[in-house]
Amino acid sequence: MNAHLEAMAPSLVWRHFRTLCNTPRPSGHEAALVAILEEWADAQGLAYDRDAFGNLRLRKPASPGCEQAPGVVLQGHLDMVAQANSGHAHDFTRDPISTYVADGWLHAEGTTLGADNGLGVAAILAVLEDPDLRHGPLEALFTLEEETSMGGALNLAENWLEGSLLLNLDSEDRGQVYIGCAGGADVEVDAQLPSAAAGEHERVVEIALTGLKGGHSGMDIHKPLGNANRLLVRVLRSLEAFDARLISYHGGTLRNAIPREAFAQVALPADEVDAALVAIAGLETILLRELGSGDSGLKISAQRLSEHPDVEPLTLDASVMLLAALHAAPCGVERMSADVPGVVETSNNLGVLSLEKGRLHLCALVRSLHDSAVVAMADRFKALFGLIGARVKVENGYPGWAPNPDGELLATFNARHAALLGHEPEVKVIHAGLECGILGSKYPHLDMISFGPLIRGAHSPDERVELASVEEFWLMLRALIEDLAGQR
Image (cartoon, rainbow, N blue to C red; front, side, top):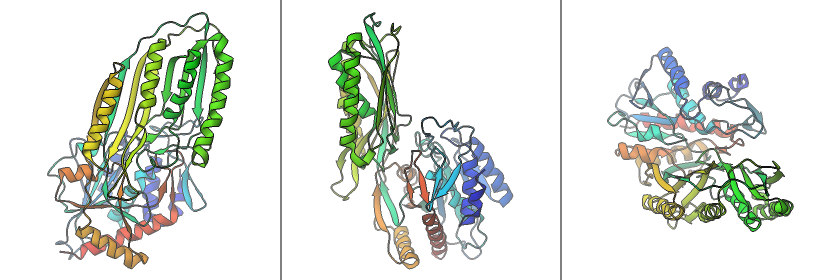
């Protein structure tokens, strides 16, 4: 599958990306890809090993005469976000990603593409294979479970890596280089809420909110995108006027993807159903007006279900209190940075929300350039959801990456970018959880930068990569490695 990729330039990169597309690799299911890479390393004569968590390292000795150059660690993560459009049957643990080219961009058929971080990984493999590249000592570090928990980086072995420079290839903007990123943590909310059987006078209405674009919960959080969980909660709050009681809820699938869809069932008095359906239709018009062109595909559908419901909705008080807490929960941009213009400082994504048989589960992802702000935002969740008796845990915390604008690696990158492309890159700080912050905490001596090709719609089925930017990215990566090979 995806044979057309091998006809594209740069051929080394796209050939390896084809392997990644054809090998299922959602977070937690990277073992098959690791085995393929180890077999490939054997064929290339490259040394490889794994740490206790399963992170994979490949090593290539320096080119003759470059043995004294600084060691370079090329780093990317093997896993990808698993998101598919409604109605598009795709098993991310079994099915390959099907790709196509349109208007100079590579897309996937109804799913995430995996360019995040597949193209970074493919470029690293291409570097290791390139027979004409002059380089110093190289290490390729491939981490696991980045998209779900940063588990690979958090559990990376210490005193394992040997290089002094690290190139993270997990950024998504052409002509930019990143020298800092946000830290973050998962906030998990759980509760068992009181329920009571539906009465003979009540009927069930099912509501579906679909059609949103979704996106990356860090890099896209400042954009005019709808969050399906936030919007459906608004719809449900409007039904309190009809004494609606929440039965079930399912919204979002990943804490680091802005939810595109959410679904709920409510029980309400039979004589209020028609009025409730009219109110829901009216809210679709209102929300579409608010979202404007930023997310114009919103659809809200509602239908009456069973005549004699055999369900146990939440009690009216529990339903009202839960929806009030969800409505008040932080969502989206909390604060813009005062020191880095145009960069989000602190945000939260209401990523995954479910209610089934009275059991509530919410997973939110808090991000900030300041670790203290992550702690403060998580504490707000504890305070808010503690009011309804929920248990709140903060897990999978990871540190931010403090910028170093005076690093020698950045200076080398800027000079090469100017020589190769005619202008210096934009030096940026990203509101996303690059692994550099964690890697830097374990290996504080590392001088690090992050760059990559132009990717849009990451973490959604709209994910795509600009083909011309991949060629530029490859040229820049090769040239930078050769420049570093000449340093002592």
